Length: 53
Length: 253
Image 1 (tube, chains in turn red, cyan):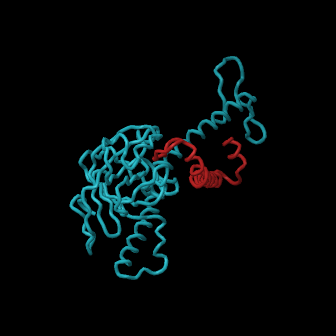
Image 2 (image 1 turned 30 degrees about the vertical axis):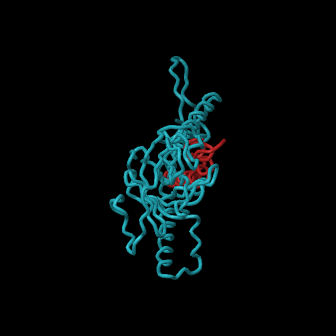
Image 3 (image 1 turned 30 degrees about the horizontal axis):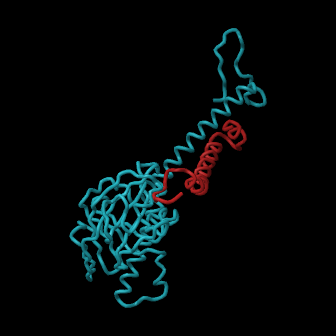
C-alpha cells in the first residue's frame, strides 16, 4: 500500500519525501479535525455525567 | 518491507524485479504485506487518538473556556460601571466560576447544561437533566449539581480525588462568593445513580433539605466506567467587594 503510493508519487526521492510528509500531515489533519471528533462520543471514555439510560 | 525473504534452502525465493524496479510477489505475500501495513496504520491511528484525547482537546477547551471567562468578567465589570450595552446577555449560559483550591488553583467556568458541547468547551456544567440543579443564586434550598471532564476537554475535574472532607469549594457569581465545605465523598458509583443529584442527595448521609453542592465526574481516570461524587454544604455567603477580593478559602486567584 505505502510502497504503491511511493512508486506513484512523481519526482525524485526528495520530492517524493516532501510529498509523503505532506500526505501524512493531511491525514493527521483529517483525523484530528473530522474523524476523532466524530468517533469520540461513540467511545466510552469521556462521559462525566450521571444519567438515566 | 518491499522484499519477502524465505528461509527454505534450495529454492530461489528472491523477489523478481521487472517493470522498472517494481517487485513482484506472490498473492499471499502481497496480502500479508498489506495486512501488516494496515495493522501498523491502525496502531498509529490509535496512538494519535490518545494524543488527541489527552492533549489536543485540552488545548482547544482551555482556549474556549478562557475566552468565555474573559467575556463574562468583562461583562461583570461593565455592569458594575452601569453600562450594560448590547450583547450583555450573550454569556452562552456562563453563570460564574468554581474555585476548588485543593484540586487546582485555576478557576473553572460554570455554564448551563451538561451536554457534550458545554463540557467539551472546558466548562463545568450544572445539571438541567435528569435532576435539575438549584442555583445558589436563587437562594433556595436544593442541590447545585455539576459535571466536568476528568480527562481531555480541559479536564477540569481531573484532580477530584485530591479533595478531602472539610475542603472548601467556592462558587463565584457576579456579586457573591458562595463558600461550601465538603462533607462526603463517594469515590465510585454507577453512572446511572441519578439519586446523587437529588435536592437532598441520596447516599450523602444528609436527610434534611439544605444548600448542597455536588461535583460529578468519571472514574477511574481515562475511562468512564463509574462516577466519582463529591458533596459539599453551604457554610457562608460573602458579598463581592470592589476589587473582587477572594474569601480566605481561596489562596491566590
